[in-house]
Picture 1 (cartoon, one colour):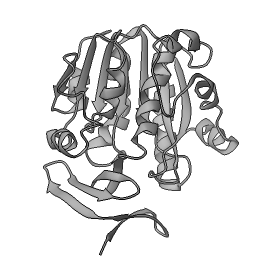
Picture 2 (picture 1 turned 90 degrees about the horizontal axis):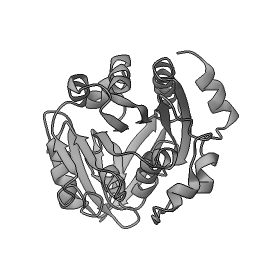
Picture 3 (picture 1 turned 60 degrees about the vertical axis):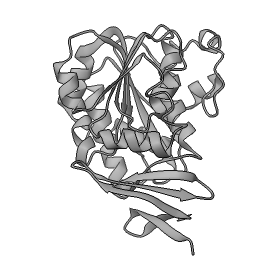
Picture 4 (picture 1 turned 30 degrees about the vertical axis):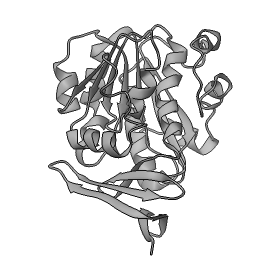
Length: 285
């Protein structure tokens, strides 16, 4: 008999997937990792009981964390990924032959190794692309210790602001990101959801800190069916580039990348937020 994975989105709202096999369970010094197999979503994994990645919809997240920035500054050469242990973000960045360096900092090595085992398509480039350097350490300390003006792009592919991901939503972290980015640098960060109160609060806190740190700070949305409400956000912050005014669709399209979610028409549209989201982001937290 198949069993049910259930995640509580709020006190009275849950999300469930019927799974055929619970293929791995492990407790590391940082978190609890579980991998499951299902008919609808394929293999998926959770951290501390919260959904991280499914084979079926991971393309939405990884397209949108990566390609938006590359279509604003197609000359990005040095990229830092904080988190991203499943390998999907690194996979998408590695599709750009013009990128010269991809540093990926993941605090929990077991997330990477288990993703390589159970989600090989997502983690496919972590060992095969020589531009990718894996660092299994605290992303906060890594950025704090990094020299000034080093990276063109930082992608904060973090968990929610609890547990290992908590410090990646701090003012000091954003200040350090600003410092280690070049004058043309861009920061993309996981920005939570506007829909349920607990996530909306973290969205507002993150945006408030970032807009007080970076010269340009905008927010864009995408649809992630297996995340709470399905309505999820990324933050776009930069010292120089505006994500719409400096959008370069014709140049980006010359990369000739086949994507399942992102496209040039969607680029501008994803920054057009619902009224209630704009109102919440305008409020100081």
